[in-house]
Length: 437
Image (cartoon, rainbow, N blue to C red):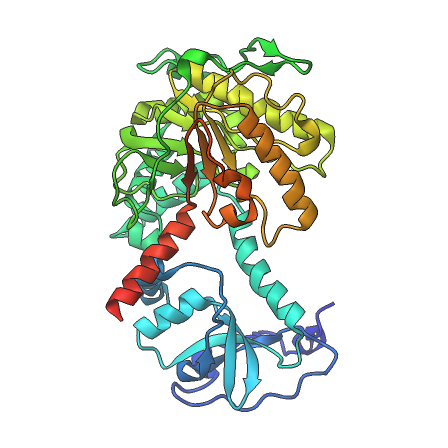
């Protein structure tokens, strides 16, 4: 039970436990010292106070990259007010360090606010607690997904309510809003998916079975529809699509604002729950991208970890290969993604034609690799190189060359790095800041 439950329970009827922020402290006035925290607890104090912006310290190791959306957050605060308090830890001497809310803090500075609402963590909280909370709050915000049909209806209602600028009111870019509003206007049912398979860009029946290869009957990819071209060097998205095409477009992660879909190569370097829809509704999603003009893709990167049960590893390999074949049958050219555990090397390449181009993802590991993980991953990379693909796309920060020097060895085929979008964006922002300074 929360530590403050008795205090809240004892309030008179009709009295809210959290008063409006204007009643907490007058702008520009330092909040009164609060009662001391019990030494044994890390739990935040469940009340909101206004804290002077000048006395807030940023966490200089904040891993979130958000400088390009500060203006958007500032617009949201102008429109709706500062409705989500920051979380800070008291440092003493009237100072507090941000635990959650760096983007809101930057927006507050842009708006020249003198104070911001905060929830306070005691100075006695352990580093382990604060660091874990900082990571967890941000990660949980990413873990949830959207029900696109319900979201579309909400946007449509917001438009009916008289919102003058849906993009500013919702935070979605214009292309995303248009696509969602089309979904809200779509009166078709699941049974009408057959119409898409008969349309200008016909796609196969999703119940189709492809011929299997190897001991586990993994679907075989077609040799004539393999994409053999240099890896894209530019990511799609606002503020980052400034290089030569083609552009890498990471499904359900990148902005499509202003994107020429015909120049996009579809990638799936996201959490599995964000790309499961390509397995569940391949006709819908393949058809949608074909209608936009996107005809190139990397097969979905469904995760495979060595510590997972065999059945789960096999299933994710199977459906990556199956969706890839489905894309090919619909008219797409694909680069097979290979995600494999060391113990599965004897069958993990089944269904991939010899001399096929390949794509691997080395960004699935957070934090430093252990020595055993480096040894195991190196053996997997060596097996991939021994496959002698036509070319190898490596989705990873180039710093991985230090961890896996085997990738530096000269090969008879191109080994090309695709740096993660966040790495590229961070480099751009650092370059901008250094140039400005």
